[in-house]
Length: 167
Image (cartoon, one colour):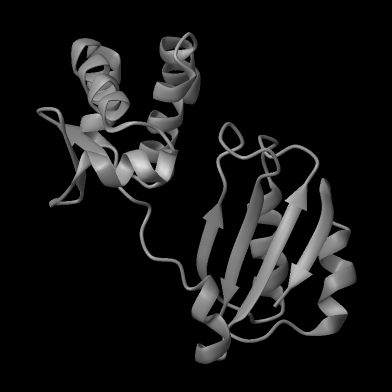
């Protein structure tokens, strides 16, 4: 998906910044308007977030509307949902953040899920950064309880895991 967007706006870096803000925040476009679910977002807000002029946002919306592939992507995109990461400590939940060598390699999530399951820890939420959008994508797991320290070396044994942070 990101390659399609990037290739379309390759000659327009400011429009690409706008498109990136839309994608990263799950903002959709319909009839040259921007929405967060059903809430309309004024173009000036997007312009400030992307550090561009409001006209650039409008030009980006026009370009999206004129390209059928982009139009389909941006009409249907939605936010991924709420993240418990920032409030996990207040809810007595554990947070594990993994960095891997190849975010596109299969098996990392299933391997850690199996490890946690074998120690009777339940995953409440899994958040995976898109490797096409993040320079250093991470897998963040919100776990039912704080993770025991002795589990950290076991997680580091999972193929491809290079770094682990526990909150």
